[in-house]
Length: 258
Length: 353
Image (cartoon, rainbow over all chains, first blue to last red; front, side):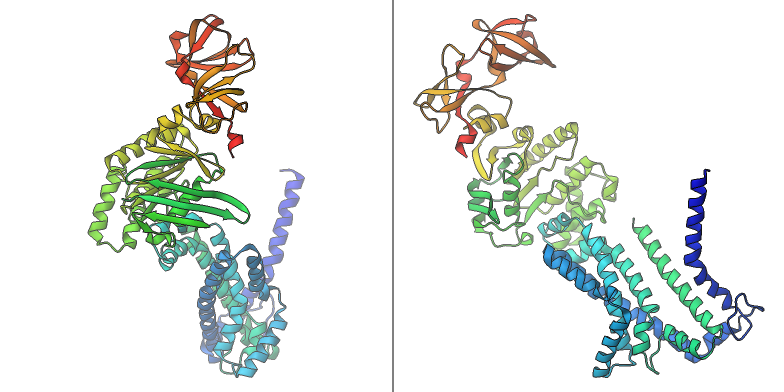
């Protein structure tokens, strides 16, 4: 191996470490016996896992997060797939316009969105409700679905749709029997992105959550401001595991298809 | 099975006319080929028939019924695409059954008809295969089976053999011909390949620049082309350019610079006295003849039972001859002639359009 090759490998390893280490560092902190986060912990224990899963204020937020993420996923997959189909059918200029519109929330600063959505939620009395959180998360998750499904649609052979129509199928039948099965990988990918986006969303959620409905990231944020206890690390670890689970599930699904 | 009538069908894309008004009647059960180079409008006409494109003007009438405004799914036509357009996520049997499932036929009726058509297209035992496991020729047959199983009024084929290699193309040509002869069904077949057109068609419509230039049987077109475009498009041709000396009673004489006497033959339409035209002489009509024109053999191409010979006349003209191998001696210095009945005097295609 020559020097260039070695230095390239080292650079790649360093970059990977830079990306992954801070995230992984939180995991040992979750197994600390102490009452504050310190790396590495002086003594090990699973006591904070007990706290996390027994304390209602934590368990309920985890369930709320899962519920909001699940509803957000369903809503954004349905709306986003429909939007992607519409975009794919429109002319080149309309297409550019619509794509820009649907990707808007990704480039808009989160705090701007948060303020805007908060004022809307206040005006309609929705602050602190699941509905408000789902709407907010959907604005963020939708672009990923539109993008993923859009890519699948681009590679879909239009002549398949013509062939199906020629064989007597109506539009809904064509969608159900030809379009949907062939764009399924894109829909699945969009769904995973939507779920993860909602599950780890914090800025909008801080504005829109209330005492009755609170998501896990909001609870972590509140806890950290009061006490820097390892239960925060437990919450973070749970989130990492769920996000990894969702990502690998989608990979497995796509590999099975291809 | 039905008659098809195109009445004044035209199509423009923006300012570009893809089809000039076309009138065409196809009798029931006829195999009609639209033959022409790319951009001649043949696929546009096919797509208008299938309902994938709306004509700018005119009517499509099938079996006496005006279907111009009907969507494709209500037309009961079987389309075979150049790319086959098979559903990649379905098995062979599911692909073939698609049109029947959509028509909500009983399950055992579907199974019976799928199995029949697979047998007919020599795909028995392939029902459970995935599409990607099939060769190009097999995919082509699945596409054909899928189009035929719905018992369409009209079968439409858009260069269905374009993706196959030469040997396979020949086999499938005869296969399609056999299926058509066994159960004649009105068929419109689009191709730019003259051989396909000659092998399969009852009737051929030669298209150029959005117009039907000539329509007739293969032998009509080959023996009596209306202009040099059709002559060039079907079969091999020698064309000698000259000036029209005489036109009368369907015959004409063409003065060709360098030739001592004018060439006389059947006159194409639209010849003008004194105008430019070409004499068509098919290579199989050019033969050795003692006392004929003197020529040099410039090239000899062995084609099996035939030999193609490139002859250079004293006038500078070049002629191809295509005769049985024994007819041309090995000598390079020959005298040649042709059957007088073999000559057609044709207007140049560019003058017509």
